[in-house]
Structures are given as structure tokens and as C-alpha cells.
Length: 639
Image (cartoon, rainbow, N blue to C red; front, side):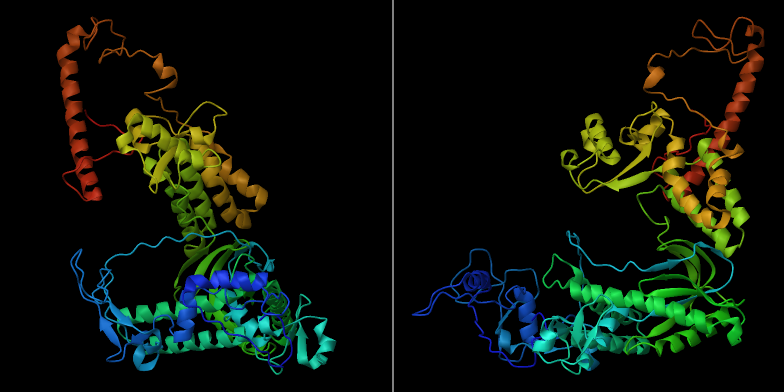
């Protein structure tokens, strides 16, 4: 299968095994070699022996994903339900919980691809499902091309995107295992320079006029099926069927894109780095050519408003500052530029207008945010964020909330100064313990036992401590462990400072606010504000200054010096230390009635406030019967 060996036919011997498990030993026997009759020992190369049996069956039976299977009348037999231990029949009974089980010869199956009348949806009922995906180690040859000019742009930025770039490259240049040409074979096969191409990485492939590759043909089928699915999607009106069709076209898109992936995976069925590196080489070259074409045509000297500048390009898209003032102008010029640049590339490679960002914050490679306009120039579709800490569960909620609010101030309100002021206010609240503890909780999944982790992990160490305190309430494998980082002696590792949030609340343990500022907030904030304020100024404005000088330190009820502390009663009138267990001192004894009335009035006020807050908390948590856990550090309530 590998390499082009000319168009001369070759003889192959087809060996059919009685059972799938015999394929591997047969392959090993053939490759080790054996002696037959009077012939010398000879080894043989086995082909297609590494293909999974299920895949082989689907190929031989023309079974594809989401297709219909027809069992012709009289060609199958229904299995019967049998009680445990029942025998006496020559036919097997049902072995699963499926409604129907049948026995049918594999060559009697009739497969109908999910197209036309067979595109209707089967009456399936999903009761429950649990999917766990585990990756495996492997190497993917990836593109490293990136053109970036990091900053905040208050003008429309047009995005041009290559449609199915890697599959299009493989189809346009006929890249395949069967078309890969060894340099030593060029003269041997009498090929002229017009019969093959040389890729940017120096690899040779014969053109489709000499031999059409298998991979381009597979990709054409996948993309044409996706095109048909998208056409059906446009005509469909039923919401559920639209979801199914959308899922189908996305599945076909992923299947087409994965063809490049398995050629570059060295741990895989069919690795071929010549193909994958040629694809990425063409991709890098095309991004650079797109940049040159756009910047050479859209200039003031050619009659346009400004000189165009490509500010970001990566993998399959470029983002262009065309120098126009409105989103509509950016859309119009973007569509024109996409059609014009596409004419320079080999079909089916096509550059398309995708969207406009206005305004646009380019942070660094694969990290950016902006208001997304795709069809309506008057209203943005959404605030689009890529690679920014807005949804990661490894960070505490405070990070996502702060970053989201800052981005809304910068992009929607167009108020960078307001974003800076808000960030400084939150940092001040954090250092003064005015942040709700629920905003500081970090969660991580407990995927293995403590002994199986290579290094010490905060959530793992906490799970072990909780198990010693109360084994019944301790987290188990597979659970997400919530924790906060508490204050400790200088130099103590972070994994030793993790603690259960409820335990922290019950014992009034102080939070390590400096950790949250330095390890959680600082980097995401600096990434956002450095393009706006400048690299050095951002740190001095956000992480230094008056708002960081005021700090509130709480006193824990457990551990540390509190183990040696002794509680003493004080007079409710003058606060003098009392030697006996009484309410007032001898000096305030004559004011006992007055002080009593004041305390009763103060208690009544606190009870009223507490009742209102308690009712509000019950509404928020959605229950009037369960206890409410107060998560505020600084609170006053009656006991």
C-alpha cells in the first residue's frame, strides 16, 4: 500500500480465516516464513491483517455510521426469551436486554446509507449511557505557523478561514500512501517532472493524472456526504431532527479532519509522516501566501481606505485589519478578499469569509477575545473567548467571574479603565477577606489513590486527611474534591495548605489570600491587560498600589497559637476583664438595668436582621426546610 510502484497490476493471495482470532497467528506465521514442499523457506508480507475485525466486517458489508440495516424476509430467525437453566432447543436464546435478537447470515444484510428516504430517524429510546474517553500516548505532527501582533484593537477585525483546510490540501495535491513517490523510483518508473509534485517539505507525490490516491477519494466521499447532510439540515423544520442532522454533519467533518491526524500519529495503524508533514507544510505556505496577497492588494495606493495588515494567522485562518470603520464594511471587504485569494489556490482549496471581531483583544497564540459578528452587522452574536480562563474547573470561580466581567467592560462597554478599576476592587476585597468563600473553592477529580500519584497533590492530601477525620464523609475515587488554600507558616507547600471549605467555615480558619492573588488571579489578569496597558505597567497598576496594602487577618479557632490561648469574659458595659463568670463588673453594677435594656434592644435588632437574611438564603438555595450554611467570612448574627 505504501509508495507508488507504477500502474502495473500485482497478484495477491486472499486467505480467509474461519475465526477472527486466527488472523494474528496466521500473520505471524507468514512473516516468520515457512518451508513448503521442495521450495526454500520463504517469508511473506501480510496486508490488511492489522484492521479490526469489526471494521473489516463493516467494509465488506457496506455498513456505515448512522445507516439503516434491512433484514430480508425469511433470511433471519428471532431468538426467544428463555428462563434460566432452560434447555432442549437447538437454537440459542436471548442473551441481552434488547427487545429483539436475531440470527442472520452476514451476507444477507442489506445496508442503506443515511441519504434520501433512508435519512429519517429511527425510533430509538436512550435510557442511559456512560462514556469514558481515555487518550493514549502518541505523537502528532502539528503545524507551528503563527503570525501575531498582540494588542487591543478598537476597529473591526475580519477573519478569513480555509474551509476544511487539511482535507482540501490532501485532495488538491493527491497526497496518499499509494501516491507517495520514492526519489529512487523516479527514473526507474520513467516519470517526467509533470507527473509528480514536490511538497514544501521535499516529499514527492504523483499527480492524480497518473494515479488517483485512496485518501483523496475517501475525503471526497466524506465531504460530499457532509454537504448533503447540511443541505438536508437547511430544509428540516423539526428541532430534534435538526439536532441529529447537525450532529451528523459535524461527525463527518471530524472524520474528514481525522484522516490527517492518523497519518501523523506514530503510535497508530497507518502512520506516514511524509503525508502529515507535507500537509502542514502546505498549510504554512498558504497562510503566508494569503498574508502576502491581502497586504499587497488592499492598500491605499490601490484605492482602498487603508493598508491592510494581517495581525494573526494560525493553522487554517487569518485575521485582517482592513482599516475600515464599520462592521458592514469589514464584512463586504472580507468576502471580496476571500474570493480573490481563493483564485490563487488549487481547487478544492477555498478561503471563506467567516466573521468579524469588533472590538478585538489579541493576547497571544490561541488566546483572544472579541465581539463576534457573522451575519448581522448591527448586533453581535456573542462574546467569543478562546484559550482564556473563563470555564476551567482547575481555577476557582473568582477567576472566571472576574475575567468575564473585565472582558465585558473592555469589549461590550468599551471601558478598559472601568475594567482596571473593577479588577483592583476585587483584589482589595480578596486581601481584606470580603470575598465569599464559595468563590475561592478549587475542585479536582480524585482519579487514583495517593500512592499512585507521582507527586504530592493538594486534593489528594486533603482526601487523606478527611479520611482520617471521618472516613464516612471522605471523597472516593472518581469524586471531585473541593478545597481552599488556607494560611500557614512561610515556606509550607501548597498541597499541605489545602482544606475542606466546610471545615474552614466551622473553625474560622484564615484563607491564604496572597496565594489566590499570586497563583490564581495574577497571570490571567496580566494576560488580558498587558495588550492594553503594556507589559510592565499592567503589573504595577494591578498587583501593586494602595488597593493591595490593606489586609484583614482572621484568627483561627484551631491549630497554631490558638492551642495556647485562653478565653476570658469581659464586662458588657466597660469591657473590663472579669475574674468570675458574671455579666458586669462591680463598677457597672449600678447601671445593670440600663445595660440589660440596651442588650435586649440590640438582640432584637440582630434577630430581625437574621430572620430576613435566613429567609433570603432559603430562597436562594431553593429550600425552606434544609439548614443554610453561611459562607461569608465577615458576618454578624445572633446565637
